Image (cartoon, rainbow over all chains, first blue to last red; front, side):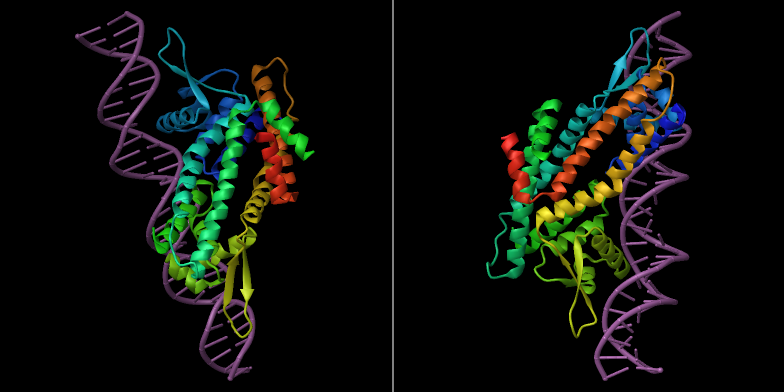
Length: 168
Length: 168
DNA sequence: TTTAACTTTCAGTAATTTTTGAACTTTTGA
DNA sequence: TCAAAAGTTCAAAAATTACTGAAAGTTAAA
């Protein structure tokens, strides 16, 4: 396979994967493009490579910055902005985990705690099943939460070697 | 909070969470409803609780069965089908992990292996960056894969106690 | 074998999400 | 201070995804 074909496949696959996980396809594609670009790119270049509009490029770049996956670079003597993606996969994974935890896990845990307080009749089967499900999911969510928190603090090498020590 | 309100909030939240993770909102809501229902429900009951059409209910129930999260039950002397959800969160988590691994992780690993074979000029910076990113993502994907495989085989208690032994 | 209860399918419609593009704003150098 | 170059915004259009409802298909009791 040629480099140019490989690059296209990579961008396409990253976009597809993103959309399967609730991330805007274009955002994932821009990220993919930056990941395989040695130098920072301008909006213009991104628009051209992916054949997308200026508005689209601008908005998704802003989101990527919001996710902490891309940074703006300024070059003295130039008006243009350049965009650069951190290429350390461990950082990427942690950053994504961190954002999704904040946006999704934390609110769910908050709700589950509220739902744990629902009062009802202990003889009501609906109530018993509700309580039991909420309790179990809450427990799982808290375990995941704790694991994520550890991961966010951890060094990559330590994290994986720990995993493997157990899971070998 | 009353039980009826809690049930609605739970269904709503589960649906939202699903859609944020690329799972059809209605499918997640049906799952939520079954999770808090002590008895198996009929299509009719699900349609009514969630105010959705017969076609919608039928298709999403079929998908839930495909994900291994819901089972059909037959009752002798009755023509109707009943639907029941396993309420063990560990089973649910493993089942979801298993399906997503099969549907998404496995294909991505296959592609990454192909992309590792891309040939190019070692002096070309684009090529070097491409190779390096593909290699790193591949490594991460394989680590995730291995961890998932272990998780799929593991017992819940063993899994979490292992995690916590390390992450305490 | 008929019939009624129930399930499945799918073309058309609706809802949601994403993208465009042009107007508007900001920045900078002359 | 002005104008060119770049960045931002957002209403409307396009694309995608989900839902409906009615017709077709299936099953089992009578």
